[in-house]
Image (cartoon, rainbow, N blue to C red; front, top):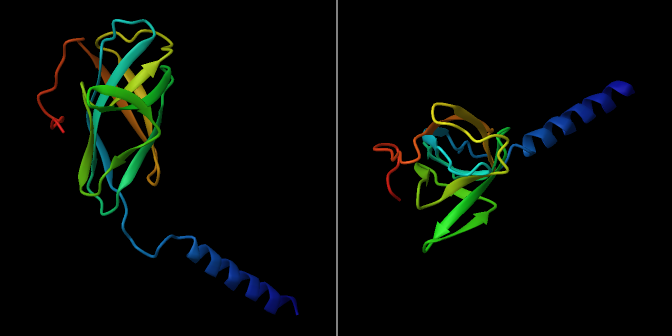
Length: 153
């Protein structure tokens, strides 16, 4: 008598797990990061970070948060010259999210120490659907402006 109940429970469990897989679509984001850097900050407690997240996948994703041992990191959106903290920024399917000087960016606050040119700051990018991505962000000169990787969106 135990075998039919166990078999039924196993089948029901498998069906429930299969149902948790989503919409049945194989669409997924395929994320990569390039052109990451932090200009050497002039402040002991704050810095900005820039990078480009490329999505080669068939599904949109969203950057939801960033963590780092260097300090608190928030995501900022710039619209009409005004910046504001946001909970998420979209990473379109077959597109990119560009975080650049004068535009959307990362803001490092309450730095544990002021990063110096030549150092690297590690951050972990968190997304709504994709696994976290760890990025090593080199600290560049305060006046550094990339010539590639930031497309000026």
